[in-house]
Length: 170
Image 1 (cartoon, rainbow, N blue to C red):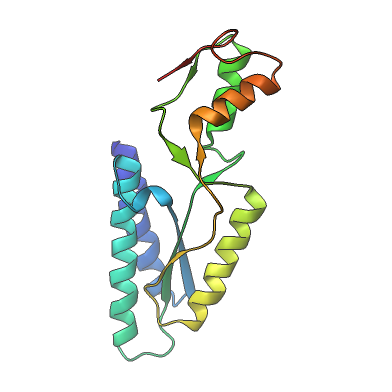
Image 2 (tube, rainbow, N blue to C red):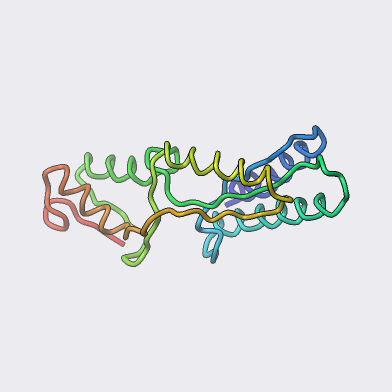
């Protein structure tokens, strides 16, 4: 939790302030759909980072300098194969014979590929360059997927049966 706060809150503040000091045209904060209604440290720390960038961006916009740094935020869901992806964790748990651990049977996430995530960041950057700054973009991520369904599908893809060969625990 401490590292999450240090990275997401203080790290974002440091990067944002540095962008302003060095007259960067657009800074894009990559946030999470978890920031919408935060229920954990990740969501809460991302929401604080968003608030800082939004406030800074709006403050710069009213400052009168047409060349100010535009602060924009893009929110998206789970990026498959990223360092924080649940997929490699599930793969390791399945390979070791289980169980597969899911936080809650009702948890769902939006999923996208790295390519789709990069496109969203570039889109946010282009939109931000035309705006005043301080915008938060929530771009189309499709439909959410229940994590328990992902776990079951991954078990089946491994040639096994969920809750028979590999247990899913919550």
